[in-house]
Length: 150
Image 1 (cartoon, rainbow, N blue to C red):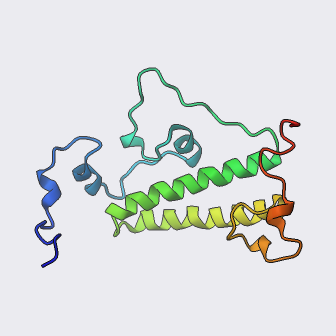
Image 2 (image 1 turned 180 degrees about the vertical axis):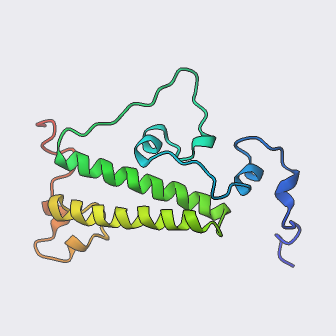
Image 3 (image 1 turned 60 degrees about the vertical axis):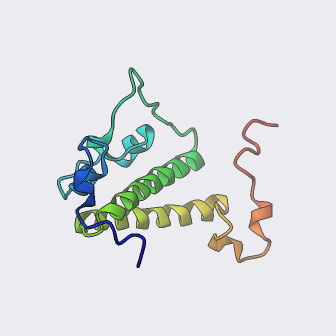
């Protein structure tokens, strides 16, 4: 017998309901309100109804100072949005509208990653720009190099 068989499909209904509970997460549907990736990235939460501000905290608005930082920030925001939706889809695998939105963000991340790596070098060791000579992982400046004239 599988150790997990003791839970029936409605096990979460016995949990208390509040805005953070698994029970509430399972009842989300296509009416879920999302903030844009910029706001979600700044505050650390893409879901408008799940954000609970701590005291007087106001998230800082991140600003890029050059084209490389702008591109990386846009990539980071879209990656964050895709990751948030991936977590949502773990609990709501049949939400077709969220699957479409997840794939839109995922495709945008792929495009931005290719653009960034074409212009500024590899982000990971899985990068397509590493299959050429010279080996760009060693040749590309690291993010902290030349920034502060160290």
